[in-house]
Image (cartoon, rainbow, N blue to C red; front, side, top):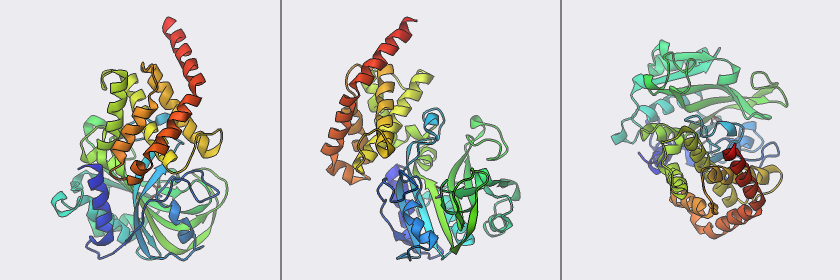
Length: 386
Ligand code: SER
């Protein structure tokens, strides 16, 4: 199932295609540039809806669904090395603003995941799915077991770090329940998500948004200011992870869309993907970061020395550096960005309409880094001589 199909099945199911008859308003992805003083970039599907959760603005709908562009750079050093970390990803989400809560969200997620492919679902075998709940969330555990029928041994409990979601900054938060897919013994040891998160891949996070997080603290411990005005639902299913599973590929860099960029990178440097582990990591970083850069530029970010501009500059520099190390000896940005537009344009037509501007900014920024390029070339030559 290609990425476009996964996306359209998602929106259709929530818009008007689920057996609970819960219709959702389809909301287009917001810009990556967050309208939030606490955030540089949109890093989760719920960000555009934050004022609704907090009760600051009355939502124009009680249920919504979206496929939101997101950028997360916290794990940037993991990109390319694991099968599942990306700096740009698309988060499919369904949201309830004081409407359905735990039972509704759990039943919706299970229905879409396990419904057969020929009936509009994703066709997951029930026996391959595991779930986690927050340590003391008996209610969620009970819904999974008694209402949905998940055997008790495939329901695991986890603490704050894993099963209590917040934006990392002040805002709505709450306990969550995650759904994992068992990719099989070739990916790691038995024992469910608490034992191995590479074998058991998280596909969907259901957040029961109930509290308001205050300033400060850590992932495990932070101040809770109180309850939100209503009990809400915020869920997130990573489109790229879902695509990797449904396309039977090993990692998110090899799915239909990202692979187009990865293939372009391999053809520029004339090497074979899959032949050398460290080169593969570099190629994946190039594919991931090029995509992030193209979308940042499309949403109005220009390379700079601080804030969002710096995020973009860092992405571009990492692309150039990795391509040089892989052997590229001429400018690469134009070809790579063009391949990104080719890969993502069908789902994001604005990339095509804005192609010339995106290319111009990307290429100009590469030229500005020519000093960096020669530095990298010299360091690499020195490295090879050693
Ligand atoms: N906000 C949650 C997440 O980003 C669910 O959408 O995982």
